Length: 297
Image (tube, rainbow, N blue to C red; front, side, top):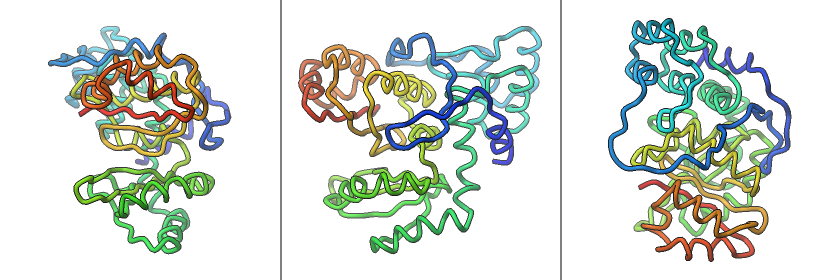
């Protein structure tokens, strides 16, 4: 966490740009050439040597590969970039080796650096007081996620869950907390609502490490894909979990057929286990207030 705080403070190449949820400092580095080219695939995928060394925490091999000229800013369709992979190991020596080799700290990497601050931030009494006040005002009992200590949760009946998010999401963003639906139990008709101490939706996804690894889709690739989508079709995020993200578009979709095909290529489950066909997905996206929903089962 300390390392992440130091690095986030030194991120360069960022500017302030309005976001549909708030006005955070948004990394301004370019995305991949075309994030929409990332296609969901089944089966075993072997990482390239540098990413493999990072994921295994093999510092000696990592240094040898970097010394031999491996590109420290390479983009792998499954394992992402070396810096993000290093940050996800939570091993300071691995992160330091990648940074010393010249890894870019901006762009999507900046969201993961910011995510590294959340646990410390949530422990600040003044920051936590905002969440506690929200819970008290709405008669909610907060608990901390067992594995994600910055994530505060509360259980509510599903009829109330979406209403709470819709009513208070922007209010909480203004106070630097992101309110969203984290999980839904249809059998018990219960929602789990989440709170994270950030105003930025992509930091939420980075912290949760939302991914589609059953289809070889990393968290980094999901964020890249959504960032590119947002430049064309602005949206808000109202729910997110370990393998899904959802929200709503802020205007009519310009080309529902094209977007339906892109979404199906990136996330087959929304058709195969959801609406049944790309044509049906196109019809959903053509509605006046279309929903955004991606999940990888």
